[in-house]
Length: 135
Image (spheres, rainbow, N blue to C red):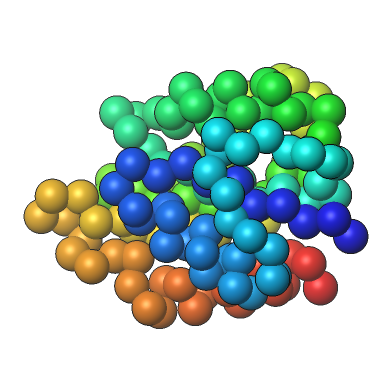
């Protein structure tokens, strides 16, 4: 099974989760600026909520790589909204990308909210989630 990890992170919150998933599945976590070089049977895609939406860079990555994604597995951070799942799923499905119903989300630190999140427990949970997806 070919696994890839891509993420977008402005503050480092989603990057922490990407690195935890990377450690769990032994695949490098790369930013969404890096295209997929080959088809990924499973793509772990990390994003965050900025101004109630996902960043345009994530949208562009999906459009540019839609033919190289088998199943997309979403992971995300946000201070207020529940996750990016609904937005990512709609965009991906509109592009013909299969989206797993499994998702990992945790709170992310933003200003005075959710200090030190994601924390070590969040990262351990992200690792367990990633292992459960590929097993």
